[in-house]
Image (cartoon, rainbow over the protein chains, first blue to last red):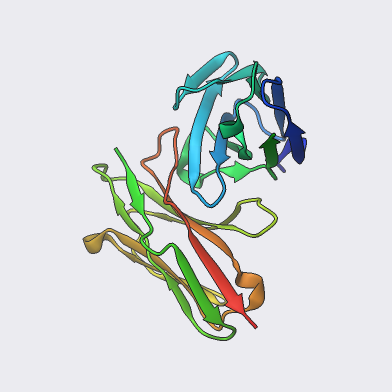
Length: 113
Length: 113
């Protein structure tokens, strides 16, 4: 069966520090991968998605970036965090066709102080 | 472009009351898929149901039921005899079977004992 792992679960970082969140999927190959952010009390905002190694599409311009160095690994990064980067970050995967929806990771709660 | 609207921001009920969550969607595609996800306080999104645009048969699963009406572009969700464990944020989502899932803003359900 397929599983998705996301870490760390919580993170407190000072403004201006770098960020690296990692997500890995097991039990499937060539998944579509996604990073979402959920600000406090708000809905889900798609940040990046990837349909293959090295292929990244950005939905929202910001100081975050994403990379997919391996088929089942998706990394969210920032060189310098802003206070507004605080939120709940969710990684998800789907099959090539999204008609079965997404499977989400357990999320990372990031607080920038 | 796809759009999902969940007009209800918050719903508060007493245990054993029924709760109906509204979802209205917009799409130009003739083939599409609709979803409901549940986000408990732990944060992880849990898949509840998937429905394709050709299947308007309503479904009941335990205390959950769904009412899909293509004519009004609505995909409503009802929890019968609510329980405290049903307290969560519920998201409606839509995909035309491409890479991306569009989510509504979510409805926060609070069930009081």
